Length: 164
Image 1: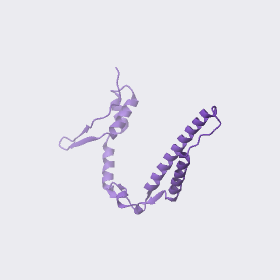
Image 2 (image 1 turned 135 degrees about the vertical axis):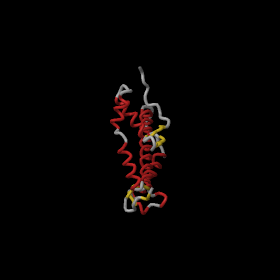
Image 3 (image 1 turned 180 degrees about the vertical axis):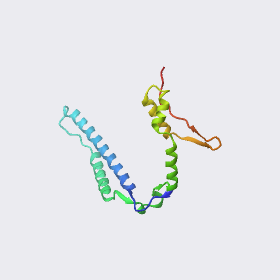
Image 4 (image 1 turned 30 degrees about the vertical axis):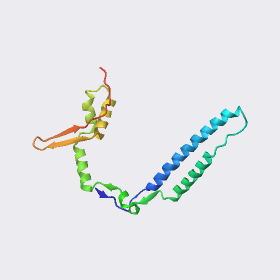
């Protein structure tokens, strides 16, 4: 792994956290308003008094503060401005090239789907199985003497139930 060049810009982690808090606060505000509207509708038939609540105003103040703080925080920052422990890393170019060469040697997904299609009733099932195989953890053991590559797939979640 190596550090990403510092001239690149990335989303500011502080801005992302503030954005999440704003979205969560707005969602909470909408729920409170909906509850208040339901309560008002129920009590409208009984009396003309509107129920009062101090929570929405305090929540609205907090939401306004978060929005202002998010607005003052830059959305994107350069990697150089991030603390050392928060800087992203990437594969070294030679490792990346090796990964691409190995991927070129693997059969295409369509070929794997065609192989599995013989044993499964639906093509969608074969495609789902191939997708799951590509993201499942496995042990890869090359054997240079036999010119083979043994792939031992770790435990997979049950994808299908077959009926015959």
